[in-house]
Length: 280
Picture 1 (spheres, rainbow, N blue to C red):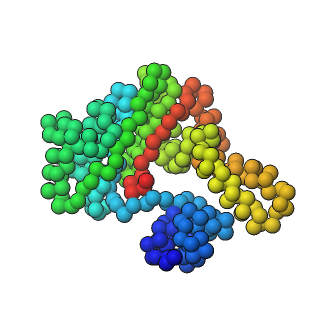
Picture 2: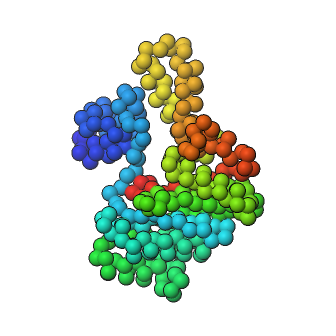
Picture 3: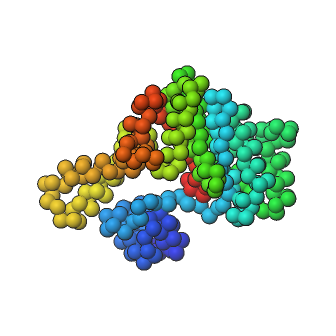
């Protein structure tokens, strides 16, 4: 099949590999993007941090908490100039507050929710579009709700407004230490960007794919075939450390894992959601 420039660009965004390396990988894999990613990883050409799902969009994220409900939204703009506009950022904050207070986690439904001033969010958005003269889209929203014996907390990177994290913890919302731990782990997730809470959460197909990549990489290093299985299982530990929040070194004190940081406080991370502007 024909390998288009768009396919090469998408693979490069995901792996950080060079254009020609990406094109060769796609040719060898008959245009299969996932197989090309794995091939580049086996060859050691993929970057340490994939930028999967990056979209050509600017904007901000915002988050809010109302009682047991935490919400976050992503509001997209065409340019960074508008993304830095205070009215644009205030609209994102209002959308997050409306989502949390109304308990609405669907974009279409959220646009119909009335804000504190009485107007529906859609009407407020239309007004900002008219004033700023740029296409503005409420791209997505998410909710995390605390049950009995649980709390929610959040973190938004207040310098860039490009990343937000919601967490649900086992703990007491009226305990300042528990709430502080929730914010700290949300901040850690924003910095370390895990994909799962714990290793048991990793889907079987993801784990199997990782095993296959590690096996091929180990084989390419010339290791004995009989030893490959054991070596792969050992190297999976590094994968879990990168992918699972509780197994990551805590960003504020890398000498301890996140699970070790949380244990003395008496809280447990149950769930997290993370938005990064322009990513899936």
